[in-house]
Length: 198
Image (spheres, rainbow, N blue to C red):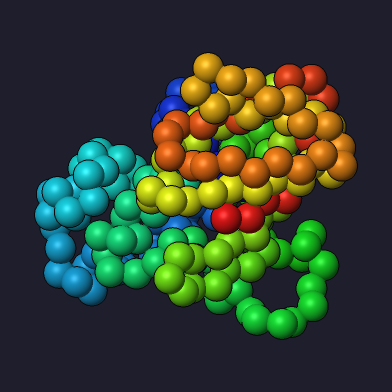
């Protein structure tokens, strides 16, 4: 589900777990691309619309950024989201159990997002797998105009908020909707699993 969690507090806050080695690796890729393109932190901040502080914390591996933030940085660095966050390229037509695909996002509490497939084209097509712990909440940022999202819940219950509307999806239920504005997604009770594509 091209769901982009809201910015997590800095791990210096003792109430939150520290970001994993996943974000340290992504931070190192951001720094490497920035230096390769001879950009200062201020220049990358201006190009991406991401604060200088957030970029510095990300490069130091000290923050768990939103997927939306990473997408903005990828575009500003002249690359794509998948190349920036994937530990290795997403292979075409190579069967692989989804649990062997490394997460590209995790919240430190047990929730993960795995990018199972991504295909560029007129509009990039992505297939995601989400494992969400009880009580998880994500603040999805808008996708480009004309974007649509499809979700299939495989276990648990997922609540998607679109404007004032609330949609509760149970296992086996699928839904599609336009992605033109912010879209919080949450798990109201126990854990939930879902696959999504856009």
